[in-house]
Length: 127
Image 1 (cartoon, one colour):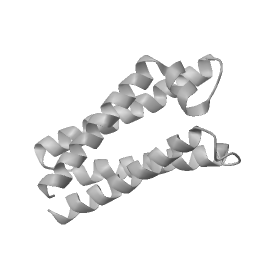
Image 2 (tube, rainbow, N blue to C red):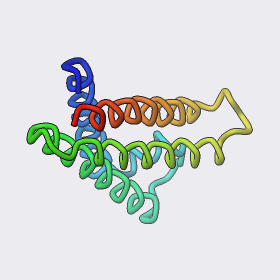
Image 3 (cartoon, one colour):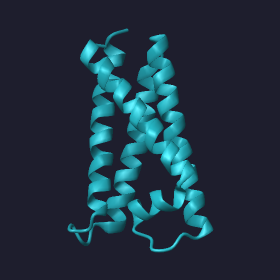
Image 4 (tube, rainbow, N blue to C red):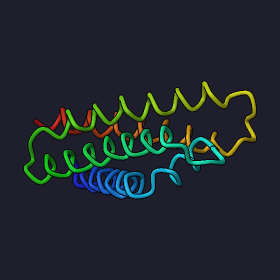
């Protein structure tokens, strides 16, 4: 992995830790931002915690793998899968109105998946 790709991978891992932590600590707010839900039922909070924990785990896993210089490609590939699923689910739910701010959430998922795929390729080719 090139030094630039390594820095980008660290930044992606750190962003997952921050976003995941925020969702775990304030799941209602995180889901309100993503889904536009005006209220905070327990089911929405539960999903926020679950999705936040997933991103937190992906971030920690990728950072540990990067620090050990081993296994980062797998963590990055799993992150691509998660980001792609998030983007597709968001587009499916909100595609009728492209002015909806949730389109930005979908776009960030697409960007995360694209960057993660590039990084996973970089990590795999440097072995």
